[in-house]
Every structure is written in C-alpha cells, then in structure tokens.
Image 1 (cartoon, helix red, strand yellow):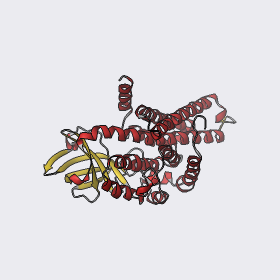
Image 2 (tube, one colour):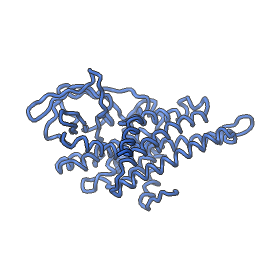
Image 3 (tube, helix red, strand yellow):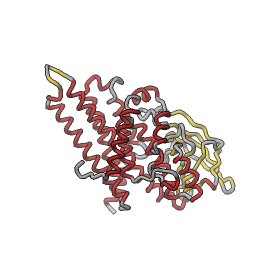
Image 4 (spheres, helix red, strand yellow):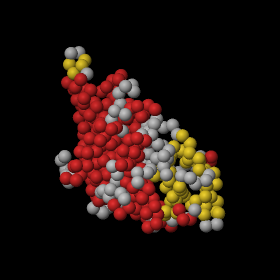
Length: 370
C-alpha cells in the first residue's frame, strides 16, 4: 500500500466492497451499458448496505463514514462499473454533502432521511450555457421564483426523489431543493457517449415555482458554498477515475499474458511492457493524489488545491489507461466483446463532468498565484 495506510475498518470496507462488486456488478456491467439501463436492482442492494448515504451522519440514519472510506468504496465499485460509482458520488458528494453542511435542521431531517432510506437524490448541473433556448430565466412570484429553461445534464436525474438545483440570480448564486413532483418539470432522455447507466438526463422548466421554503443556500452565500461543494465532489469523482484507470490496467495485463503472437505472449514485447509500465505509474500517482486529498479533508485541513489536482490528474490517467488498454488489446479493444472501449468512454465523460480540464487548470493556477 506504500504511503497509504488504511486503518482496519477501512481495510474491511475495501475487502467487502471488492467482494460485492465482483459478485454482484462485474458480470452485469457490459449488458447494462449496451442497454443503457439504470442499475435499479444493484442500486437497491447498495442502498440496503448503506452506500447511498455513506457520509450521512448516523443521527440522520446514514453510515457516517469518512471521506477516505467513501473513496475506497467508490474506487472498488467503479472498477466493476464506473456509472454506479458515479451514482454514489452524486448521492453523497453533490446531494448529501451540501445538505449536511448548509441545510436547516428541518431540511436535514427530511432529505438526509430520504437518502438514508436508500433513495436517490439528483443534481442539476450548474455549468453555464449561453445558448438562447437553454438559458434559465426567472420571474418573481411574491416570495417565490418562477423558473423556465433547460439544463442538459441532470445527474441521477432519471430516478431521483428530489433535485438540488444551483441557479444564478442578480446578486449571486443560490441552490434550491426541487421535489420531483413539482409542477412544471419535464425530464428528457439524454444520449451520452459514456456513463450510459448513470441515470443522466435533461430537465426542462416551464414556469416551475421554486418555493422560498425549499431554498437550501441563499444567493449571498451561494458562490462560496458552490466552490466548497465542487472541491468535495472533485475528491469523489477522482476516485471513480482511479477505479477506471486501475481496471483498465488489470485488463491489459491479463490479456497481454494470454494473447500470443509469433509464438510468444505479447507481454514479452518491449513496446507492450512500456505501455503497461506507463499505465501503472499513472495509476499509482493518481492513487496518492486521491487519498491525499481525502485525508486532508478528513483532517479538516485545506484541501482545495489537493482536490483539484487529484481530479485533474486522475481523469487524465483514466483516459490514458483506457487508450493504452485498447492499443494492447488491438482490434479486440474496439469491440464491445471486451470492456476496454467502455472504460475509455466512461473516462472521457468523467473528464468533463461538472468540470473540465481547462477550468481545473485555471482554478489551480489561481490558487498557486495568490
């Protein structure tokens, strides 16, 4: 494990999650991807084990685990299916975390309680889009707001009981809780390159009323808190990327030991060995960055730069390992009979989900040059 020293509880979590992922997810992941099916039965089993509320405090019915334990679980699940790892990250990092840190006690009891019961929460992506027919517009309705427009990316949106929706107002950003049965909401199916079973959808608002009572974060605090939310979710998403990179490496190693050309297994060829070494180096570097960021978060240390660095590097590592795995598998790498093409598609989607390499680099540079 090198510099990473998990405690006994964390080692047990790793062992049990790995066992579950191998037994319950691995054999189904390719079929789920081909059919673009949300993994309802698997998610139900995960909810019974408390995975949908890993970081939710025990007083609200959650598992109350630390960030390192959350990343361990996400990494192991993502090796079997990155879409399911992403579902867990959204539920915990983008939905539970903001409510835990900023919600009123009444909101915590209701919505953390919903998550603790194994329900799904959705997150409406707050990436700004300036295309006219997709711009979000607001009207005053007394104490409430009426919202109209479209958002193309709603994470966990296909099955969510409620959504967190960041919105830009005249004096800053705010976050509202929107129950699924709110009038004026239409869910649209979205076709994505990867993460096909993660429940990613689009959402249309038609004079949807955002009630004052459902305001989670007022616009006076929204900008600052959204940065904190994204810092925390960066750590979770980086664990998904790490899982993808790791399984791509494992698949490439296994294949290279079995595939023969010119009377030798291809793992004996220097070019293949070089690719495997490069993949292994990327995986181990990503692992150190991910768990360094998670450890700093758990210790209440400043982890903003660490989280961004982990997200940037691990996402790049996942794409790199996906590409190299395809090269090692050759023609088979491009077919859906082998999972490596899915690893690459999932890795590429994850690289731009809720943030982009360009934005991350800009944010990192700002912190370095303060």
